[in-house]
Length: 65
Length: 371
Image (cartoon, rainbow over all chains, first blue to last red):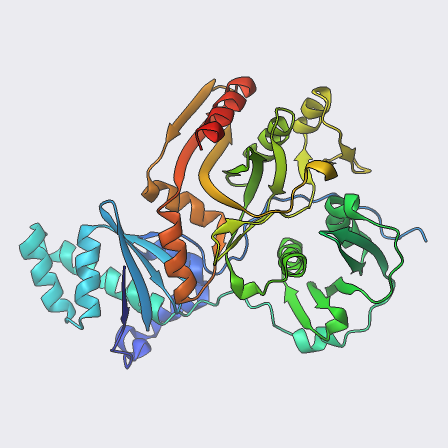
């Protein structure tokens, strides 16, 4: 196991890539990033908590009191 | 910016703190990552890639450019992680209209849930209905869940302790479950290593985890196992504590859908159906619902397939990690990510594709007996 701190934090990424490329990712969101990358992404950090869809259906608008 | 790396089989698994992203790099991608991390300019990385792997220059340029760009996006992400505190201040003081509440008891602890809509009551109360108690304690732990500005909100102790909001009902239910788990076991959220999406069954003080995407047959198999000597441990949600690396039971009833309802009823499982008959819940037998935490050894990725008799085989840690992270939420800090990787690499993983229930039950029974 290896932990490192990335030292170079001064990249001006918008300047480096121009507005079009990074802005496109910004606007289209994570799905666009995931589709564009060449390595395998193992999770979706924008999505929280996978679960089964256990929707009981519409119980009606009113409760009986 | 921090990251974590561990070599598993022939790949490097990386976790990026800024984006909470897990990723898998092959040998060539890992080389480019090292160049990026050492501040090597792209032109030099392209030359080195060509030299080491006999790449064509154009292909190498495109490859390096893509990975450098992706890494910039992971170390300085433009996409947003889920934010459950959005509008929390407004939600904390929001006045609820008509509400309905139920009082429950688990692990000797009473708690009340106040529902702000009939749908939320139906969605959240039904799996917890078997915990309902008639003791009329007034000063008890209370959570309110309610629709809020086209979203959903949750307040603990009238918002004095905590208020959270979420876009989807499933998220608010999961946040509620986490709050309840903390309450049941006197823990803080930071003490959990991961929350898994799956069903867990216990036998001989061992548990088996069945995981997969929704609709793959894990709850059906959990119901079948309950009829064959296994005790219910958790359904849909399994919290794993960091310090002990143990799973803790959560008492929401097993939820069954569609054909599984008639199948399991015909085999003798006692079910409580919803009014519309779309879902049914199998409440855990109170005398067999033990509250002790349990170590996880085996994880089974399960899939029902009518055409297949039975496929049951071990799968590699690397393949398992990919499937597992689709269905789990891991603590998003360096300590938890590191702990998770160390824990995960000690587990055993299997793939089960089944159409023959009896054979699948037999296989899972043998697996748990082997320990």
